[in-house]
Image (tube, rainbow, N blue to C red; front, side):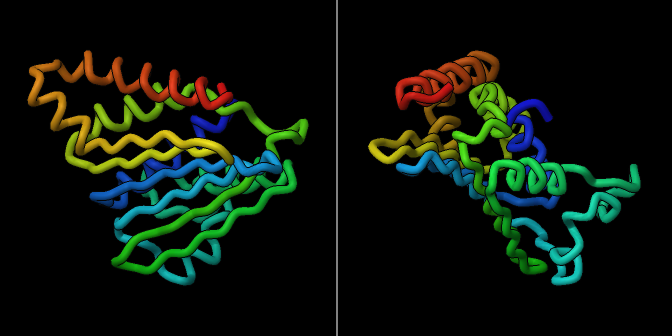
Length: 180
């Protein structure tokens, strides 16, 4: 993965595949330039045994291939910057993944195109509720897909146009907060 947005896409796709209806992603940058990303969903969740082993690339629930690289790569990239990753999951209730990165570390990946990632996720999964929050020590930006879809239907905006608006809105707000 070349940037954090692709990690986010991969982890959120796991939530979608786990039949989550509600998917929350929050990104917080603190005063020490530590970026914490929290993924939370109400999908199928994992057994304690799976949680214990899920960062092993040769442990996966997929039947199409025998490796699962998303969580192991995310953990490795976090640890390269001095960060950490925790996973809390309960079978039948959902999963919470929290990962941190030292943004000043030379090995910290760039944020990437978060607007494109979230517009694709929302546009490709209109039956899911996505909530995205990006906060810094001084300000924050939030986006709730339920509100976006309501606005789209009320104003007769096409899905493609809405996806472009979402992409631009997210990228512009993150830029205004001082990050790209």
